[in-house]
Length: 385
Image 1: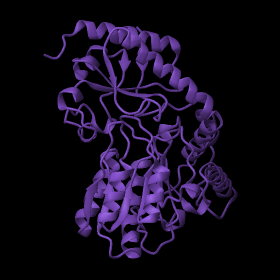
Image 2 (image 1 turned 45 degrees about the vertical axis):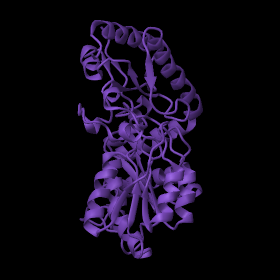
Image 3 (image 1 turned 135 degrees about the vertical axis):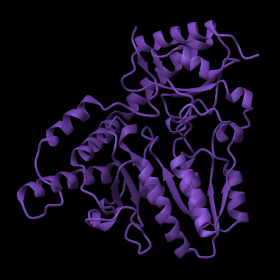
Image 4 (image 1 turned 180 degrees about the vertical axis):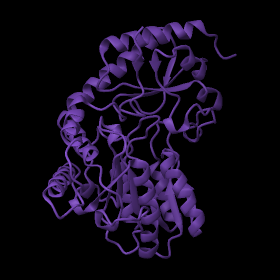
């Protein structure tokens, strides 16, 4: 029986065109930081061309981009350096705002930074539809002197797109720095200057590029308080040491270009495939979707089949259907999710939830098989008493 992958939120396989682009570089000699000979010049030229492409796609200057190993490193670098900069620019402010919509690579560094610098970390409410509560955010901005806000662009578990431009407007009005994790937001228009964000992070392996490469955008990279996390040979103007992985950069740029060119048509296709799964399951079961069904990642569903334990369901369809209970970073952790709690979802209902995400390589045939296999699996297990 065919094994079907429906966990595109956690990882997207490399597009074959991305692989082809990288294959042209892997065997080429030369280090982009070897400035004294032809082979180094060629590699540096490839890096420069990729930076120009990213700057055009993401509406920013090339000098405001920094390559990292992925979004986790980029988020950590943004937070640890950015909060120092924010403290320097706004010394009276003592509060950080975020929400439980954030990835652990944002929440954990925020907790560490708050403890280290004696700052108060406050969580903004989340609406029942899975959006950051703008009224609550404004209320907290009015009540506290806020120096920093971290807000995801697209949540990676329930899949909702956040009202990021409204968040940015509030941050500017109350003189708070804004950090945006955009690693799951490939199907949205990401325009750094238009958004007027202070820090923004991206990851290649969420957009059909290679694992191991990400980007940090910031208009504060040259600030004296910006502290590199990795020191060494002085690469990338001393902001992040280490030889740049040119094939991965080429693959990232190619993946971003492909998505940029095909975003609208792919978005519609993913919605059709996603809805086919949802409607197919609803023919047999009572299915609840969490988060607004329209303003979300087009391939993503976070749902529950009434009274069906999601861990048992996942186990029963293995190894033929791959979906998840939530973020890959959480593994099979059945702790009552802070996101579910913040949305007012009971622990009993939360134990029925799971995440399905279709992607570029998903076919109609696979969708039909998945509906059949999940339907059979649900009928074979008892409901939660």
